[in-house]
Image (cartoon, rainbow, N blue to C red; front, side, top):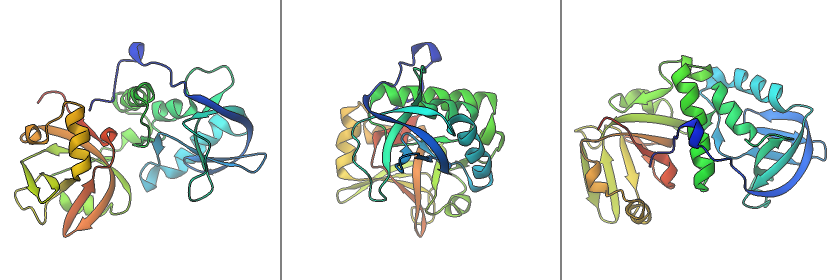
Length: 243
């Protein structure tokens, strides 16, 4: 799935309005607290690598602290931590604060947005920062090389972006594996559950056709001898141009 688009074709991310509020504090690199006590987890972004998090918190504070915002999203139900997940719009803006953070290179595009226009808009903003090498994109190692499993293993439990060539596609039972190394046990692999195979096929992506193609995947790294990353959303995978 290609989630980036040219800026001129990135439609505004205009979901249902979920209320408003005044930002009184910055909780972390992707969360703010409103003056009424609500904690808002900004949808569509993930925190950057540890060495960039202080700068990311500063960027979020400069953008939203002491500002009135409008919240938009799918629903206002709190997550298991009591936070409301939403897009935050500064009054008068037609793009969410998330886009500006991505454009500055202060965040990574997340995988929790299903609305196509929103996903395209976020992808465009991240691509702009990467091209201009802003913020976290000044670090050459932000995107991990699929051929360096030890480097990826160091990111276990952390949201990570990995790029590489799929050497083989293997199915075991109801699970499909994209293997990026000849050693299936030690090399990096992407796990695709049966449910996600159907989702990919619905989007026109046949898993077997990914063999010998370069892809970018993102999500939380797990360790199963070698590093693994499981697909739970179609927004986690992008077939790179030049294949």
